[in-house]
Image (cartoon, rainbow, N blue to C red):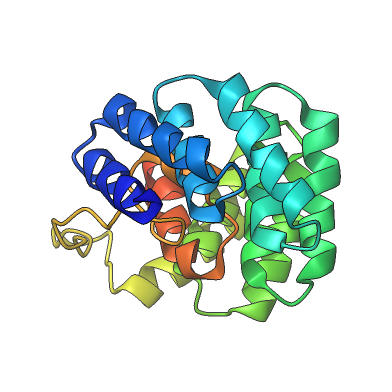
Length: 225
């Protein structure tokens, strides 16, 4: 019955009925309070309807249950950031990175946080590390260019944008549009967040890296040429 409630909750969330999803997850967690998938999905659904403190509690519980799980620690870091607890958020960003020091996603995620909190030089350094680990990461290149642009590094920004554009096959001098993502919402699961808030809350799973990329593309001002 627990799995059925979780499955039903996921379906509600796929259809943007997050409050109904939370109700289903609540039923499942009443039976199994430490059910990992139930906690993770409820936390993300709660964040989507603005109940950030409640979401934070679920993410914190996950980190206590799995103290070396980099993805849950990363999710918790983002939840802390959204609750304006940035010092504690940074601690957990770094803890997640220490657990997976060769995962470029960790550096891109911390770079995004640093950009949002005003550490622009630190953000660039983290994006550069992410690109070193994954040279074909067009999103990290684009976002690095945006930060460089903020700092007035016009030549460096142009180089970053050009490399990013080349990777995705975009020529800003022509009228061809950027490649469009398939018009199909990914499933509401811990590895495949569906909306901006879910992506924020799931930016640290390896499988979710491209979803985070979609989020950052939507959040910032977009591809530059």
